[in-house]
Amino acid sequence: MITSPRIAIIGAGMSGLCMAMKLQDAGIESYTIYELASDVGGTWRDNTYPGLSCDVPSRFYSYSFQPNPSWTHTFSSGTEIQGYFQRICDERGIRPHIRFNTAVESACYQDGRWRLRTRSGDRTDPVISDVIADVVVTATGVLRIPRYPDIAGLDSFTGPMFHSARWDHSVSLSDKRIGLIGTGSSGVQIITELAGKVRGLTVFQRTAQWVLPMPNRRYSRLIRSILERFPRLNVVYYRLWQTFFERMFGRAVVEPGWRRRVVDAWCRWNLSRVRNPELRRRLTPDYRPMCKRLVMSAGYYRAMQKPGVHLVTEPIDHVEPTGIVTADGRRHELDMIVLATGFEFHAYVRPLELRGENGLTLDEAWANGPRAYRTVAMPGFPNLFMLMGPHSPVGNQSLVLVAESQADYALWWIDQLRRSRIASAAPTVEATAKFNADMKAAMPQTIWVTGCRSWYLGRDGLPELFPWRPERHRELLAEPVLADFDVST
Ligand code: NAP
Image (cartoon, rainbow, N blue to C red):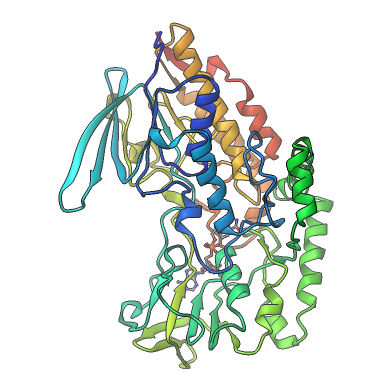
């Protein structure tokens, strides 16, 4: 029995804070969060680009146990979301548990405990420390490491150039001819915000996107004060959005049927509102809606039709000091380039070096791609739990709710350590293999394999997403199956 288990949480983003609150609510204060940066918030701290918002309604993209009656919009801005996490961190007294500016470089399981090597302080004169933990919870996020495109001559560009997740706010925008590469969720939000406000906006589109026009309404003061006064109404609101998102998109992506036809018709109707037939043709994808992550934007097509916005669909050939040259030989003069080119989705917890029992490394365990038991644990890595681990249900769903289920699951095991003779637990190889085989069998039903290139797909061409309804994920994590675990006392 470990009455006061030492718990190391890696990352103080949405899921790390979720784990911390779950532990606090269970009366456990023996946890430390290691955070690479100097503030909480993860993706909402790192992404600050113009137009940033969440495409899951804010009422639903909140902790179910920590509603926020003050959201100003259906889809609130990134700044507001970051404010929500910062406020919660302070209100719940989590900050003293966080070691900021501290990277966990490695975590090795030895003699029944985890030894973490941390690096903090100055880059030139870092402080290296070893920390012992009974339980490790990785909360390192899904889309964390920016992906830079491999385009010839990119480094030769002389104007400002940065990734969408590393926005340089010292650069003025209104006087610039901006080239934007990438039309995923980030690119679309940036375009919608900047169109018509800058000297020129040239959009380099490799693949057209399906766009669903979800309206973004402002909550009136009256509505906000009613929600403050009657907190139960927040719960009702949350459940309504949850029901809509899970029943509509959550099912449409994993089950063929009428929902796919509805989303399909909705997206096609939206596209039909592009008046210029040539522009409409170039904005028309050649795959089915939701095969790639569905982009939500009510204003994107309007933005693309504004004066000063140019769509380029010719592939990029190379970059020169003052512009981009496309394969047709055309030179696009630019003052600034934004790379909205996505993230290294397959990294998961890496570059953190994980070593489990008998020296098993993460790279060895994941030689055939990232695999986990029910998205949260791994054979050979006892007392290690992953929030947003491989195959978590991330497609157009609220990751906050996903993190809550995974944190509850980790907490269940932590409670076993405190209350029973169990000293460590890791899922068996067989149970993990069965879970992954079941997922593989379900993949052909999903929309993600219907013929498109997306960050959802792993190196084997199979989606690294959860192929069943979101409810199933909660059911799978509701109560641990002891027979699926190797337990030591
Ligand atoms: P993304 O969806 O991966 O899109 C990257 C874009 O860059 C794609 O259009 C891609 O084209 C293009 N691209 C990549 N390399 C290129 C190259 N060498 N040349 C030309 N084009 C290139 O990335 P993202 O837009 O940052 O979004 C990633 C995910 O973050 C989203 O799917 C979503 O889950 C999340 N996100 C969410 C929100 C939100 O509101 N909740 C906002 C932003 C992001 P191809 O399509 O041809 O690959």
